[in-house]
Image 1 (cartoon, rainbow over the protein chains, first blue to last red):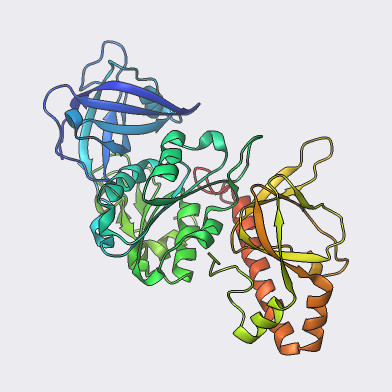
Image 2: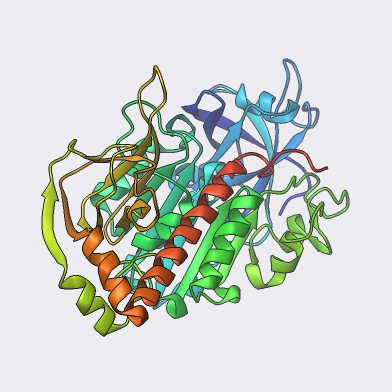
Length: 280
Length: 153
């Protein structure tokens, strides 16, 4: 973890949807310590003429890709909010200030020998993407690997090409569903939790990894619990506004749990009661 | 694969399942084939073995809106259980479908004649309907919105 931002240069910008882009960045000098799937960085965008220390503000963004090649990282950002908008507008050649790695990781080794179930809602697929890659890279250590992805509309699905490739040519059972299909949509329509019906997994030997909007995380975790997956084996990463990444500002707190320090990835058994509290 | 949570057959006791299966026959639908239309008489139902089916709702002046898809192991149709025995939605095969087809009148008669089997079947159907109702209500929340639903009161 670093206190001062380290310069990283944008080497690739991929438009995932009208509001969302993935920035592939590489260090413009020394690299940060290695990130693990689920951890996040604090990114600082810059206006014209600004240096690494004088950006327009910071945003905590989960890593959506961890590449060995040139220590590259990928971050998927939307255009919502002032700081993300500056990041969203970054182009190849732009320099970002990056701090990290911060937070807990998905810890996929906990699933060794059992079934892996990854459930993503909307932008929640971004923090799960490095986990999926990591798990598939050592697929022989698990029984069955399943990936369930839900989004509001087909246009809001992230990594569509990658999902198609995974469905066609990987060891994973991949299911994609949307709430509101567009004309020509030939895949599934319905709640992501309903898709659990078609997924092969042994609840008692399953480790689930869930990320997305909190309503979706709560609904999915409850459904998994109902089907017999132990709460401690349901790893969740609720979407809270991580801001300072030090636990001081409190914007990411889920009751007594500062998600930037003790999360973002936590066991559902730890936060189940908190996620159910109104206005928390 | 027959799913474990919402399938009709998987949750029934073996003897009830056998009695129900005695009334069933294998059918298939080509991709794109309409299986039933909204408002038509609901005189059959199906348990999907392979393939996918879309459920749609007629919208005047527009293309029918797909509201959900069903897949292997799912029950297709429950309007046959309640008067006026009319489909609330339409159904169309998204891909080649193989299914077990049940005659609604025969199954209703079976439920009348054998109260134990009838209770098991209707209880299971109620669970499936409740599960789908819950999923539909959750979708009303706009599950993927930034904070799930609208502003707090």
